Image 1 (tube, helix red, strand yellow):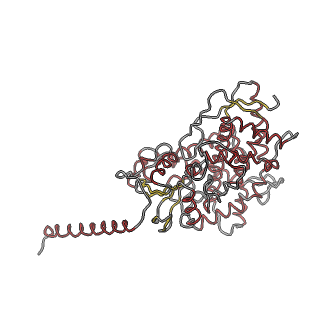
Image 2: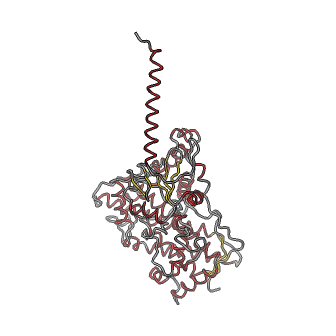
Image 3: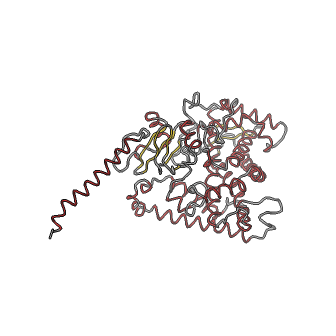
Length: 503
């Protein structure tokens, strides 16, 4: 009888031969493929160390050496970095169907009920249905127009707060805080039917939203190196996520139940003014099955969360950077003020119907979005099949990061790309709606942001009213340093000295 000991060496040799064959096969297979250029990697972490504190800037620097389509290995995750308009067009237009998926992000999976929202939902029937629902029912031009009274009232309140602070010609105000309150109050009224800007309830809600941002900006090694997931179990990260998810769920549950139970003259999701908030609309669709598919309460809560996460940051960040750039370029501010005041004429207040006559203001906003896209790295995509992009082989499951910030500063697409020059948009059809891939602050293709019209409605009205009513100065050098994080706002608050135009 042959003993087990006599089998050890032949068995080990056999196993080693299998691994050797597999390695040789994989190497040969890789050699036959044309892969995008890639910087050298370190063991285990790959290229994670090269992301830096400001990944959009670090990736742009790498792309200058390795090209506008390069492959990084973030831990065990192969990641395609896109840094030019041509490469972005390939991903978001020519191969849009291949790159429609979202990779799973554990944090957001917990926050939005297994990704039942729009932004982080994986490609599939649920995403198609919910996106169609939002585009047709929640964010259509008609629906956005129906909320104009809310935008008028809240921007007027902000103007009054600024006016009350003008008692001293040298007193500065924190305009950043006022802009955050403006966008938050508008979205609260539009989405939830009332403001959450006072009292303990407001503080709790505001802290929860800040915690989401803080956690999103926290590096989670388990997302890239699976065997390091245990770190977040022992450093308190997972506990914070569970606590936050529970708190948000309780808050949103309360909002939904409040809308279900309230008896304030509403019928079928509408009130006497014809103005229903988004929760009302979603609940009506749920009751009447208008969407053609069942809408669960978790989906309603996930969609409402998306409205806050996307709407608040986009509008506040754009307004903050716009005013900051105008303060750095006083001649541009004067030109904008002249346009706004000429359109207003003898009227005391700017109204939304005036905005289409303000072409230079629209150019200022576009130039702000070019230099300061709210999300410099668009939300990641993931390939659903093997494909070729610009002659390179891209494997199924490859993550894709599109550097909108680098694309908008590409010398191949823009003259003097680092300079703030709104005039570049005065005689061009280039827009941010996803058709011009050199300018994609809101993304493009089927995964493009569906809330552009809503966000721009707030930005245009607020900026026009600020320029109409006040002259702004600063008492010291304006620091334009960016804060680090997924959404890039000013690191330091925007402190301004307002003077009413009548002074």
